[in-house]
Image (cartoon, rainbow, N blue to C red):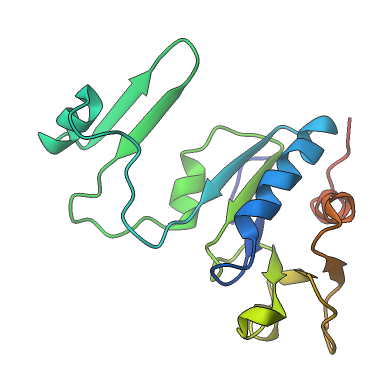
Length: 173
């Protein structure tokens, strides 16, 4: 990945239902408490909508706008319609993000960025780390034998945070 310094990109990948979103939501307060400026990008496998039918921004999109920005004193959001164009790559999406210390990527399990695999043996899904050299560790709710990468306890958010900071060579404030 060709990214502006000092932004680091680190992913959390795993099968649906493995707990990626829950882990991201638990990591964010730990990272920000340590002074890390962090943003996230999440992949959705389906159509999703941020605004509501009938609202002005929805009407703008439905009328054909390629992009609609909604802004207020508290936040802004940009909605981009593909209008038949292919889904953008993760690299293209990252280039649209404002630089931060750490960009956590949820999903994009086949991306070329380093990632932590979130694995729950009870799901009966194969380990991604067996075929993906960019998986640098596994976080699981149960022991997993025969791993070539470190195994972290899925509920040990402090240890996972330390691992990510060390791996990305980020120093806590």
